[in-house]
Length: 180
Image 1 (cartoon, rainbow, N blue to C red):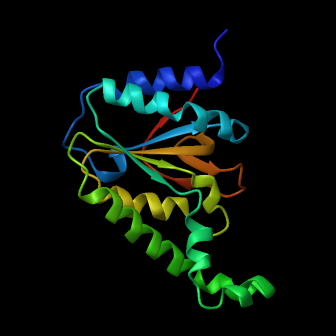
Image 2 (cartoon, rainbow, N blue to C red):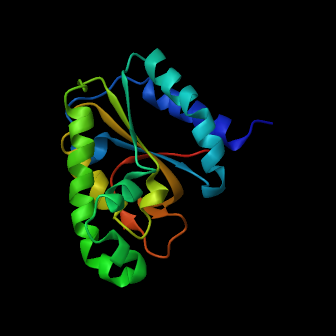
Image 3 (cartoon, rainbow, N blue to C red):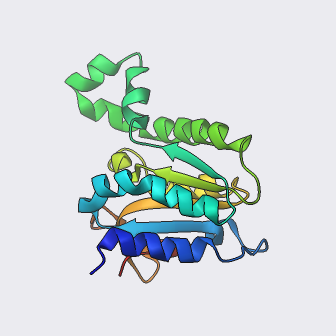
């Protein structure tokens, strides 16, 4: 029997190889690869396989890594020591973090992308509690010419996405690919 990630990779490979329509909205150009949160490390180990099937389908791959985005941003803050002593002071700065993250990520892919590119967003779980993945995806998707592929540790039901089994989810009109 095939494991969940092999099924997920197979579903992704089937979807990414279908010819792309150029007359769809930014939200519809987003693809959420939804996997169980406990498969995070296994998925990361198999990320090169997702890249390979993407390239085999004729699409360049641009990887955007989010894992260290918050710690790197935090290290640059003038008051980072004070934030560690009293973390509630940091909550008002989360919006600045999200804005700077969108700018930084956009800068990374803007010059490299084409209408055939896949921009892969990896490490969304690390944003939990600091930034809204839904807002980040909406902001990034508007500037992506090809497809935005969001590797998403969570759940998807009836166009509602829940990051890391959070109580609240959000509706989004992206294509969802899962192993189920």
